[in-house]
Image (cartoon, rainbow, N blue to C red; front, side):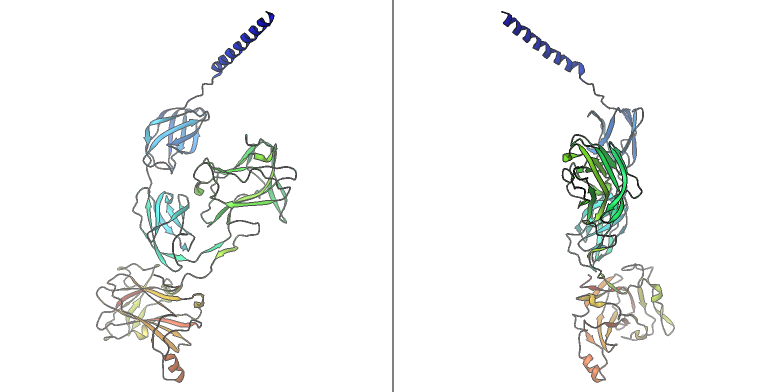
Length: 562
């Protein structure tokens, strides 16, 4: 009987404990504060501009426009109002404003916020490196939605409001070409096409963008432990380095962090790599992960243990990000010191943290040539940009050629200036300005850098008048003379003409009165292994037509320019 009473007492006790636990749960449920939005200063504002919200914003830590977080959130001290910048990547058709707090509570507006899209202006397009990239510089160029090169869409590599970088890795371009770059923008602006952009040979030299190097003896670490900047040996050189000795909490929580409020400008880098040097004491370890302050993160393994030696880690900037889409144009680096698998200690040293041109092994210095060619994309024969080299020309006292003619009628084909011949009325049919020609000395031009050099030029004739142009070239102290003839009738428009300098048969105008001259007079091509002496342009009258022709952009390129 006593035994049954004991069981009964035990059963009742357990039931009371269960009831008590249930009662505790109901008593200690936390009534988390829910943010409330009373008023929004505007539901229609320009991207990046600031709006103000009033309401109840206890512990609010994020404001979203749809699913895109706003920028530069500032909550007032009394938590009754906040300011936030409209994010440039939000849905242009509009989205509700969502306010959330640290307790996971949120509220949103019934009305959608619809952004005003600012205009985009393109001010400059850089030369395009074959197989690499080019820059578009201007105002709000991060809002470009499409960029094409000769009609082919190119990929965006990075962007800021003033400069975006695009890749031409997939395009079949050749150095010396001129291409057109066209644009579409979020605001549907009428952006003029950038015409005749130069394509050049690629050349990459080593460069770097330093995020932290501790040269000034300070650091930006905030958190637990002993953090200092020390001086010591790094690969044979004394440097300042960051040193941290702190407790480690595995993956549970961070011991501290180091944050930069500056966006590293990587627009000048072709192949950016995240690069840092780290060391852990022998017998101990440490770790950190990298964040971009936009909710993305990446790991470098799961714990550093270098045995007291400096180790350089260098990995592509764009790779291995988790959490969302990484944007290098808005990247604000943050090192979060979680010890990961390193154990109960967070012991490590950092010599530098930077973004380098390509993978860094500790030996490269700024300016070192990495890859590419120093070969020129073109040799300019007559570009006419140096006005002092191309003076006015007279025939019997009459002006026949000048940089100042037709400048109100036509724009230059390339650059800022062009040269024009006009009719002085003194020439008969087929007569030429033999004594009034223009020429360029070529002996120092290094044509040997090209395998198949092409001469190209642009011509623009007055309407309805066919012209007669001779390009005369000299070799072997001007004893070998070969020519190419052109009869442009471009009707006031620029047209291009070109020929292979060494692989085209030409008309021979050499003097054959000597035995050696007879040999030269029998040739139809130049010797590619000997320098040219000079290239000359002669303007003739074509039958009875009026002379009126402009000349621009005579250059030599590897293969055809057009």
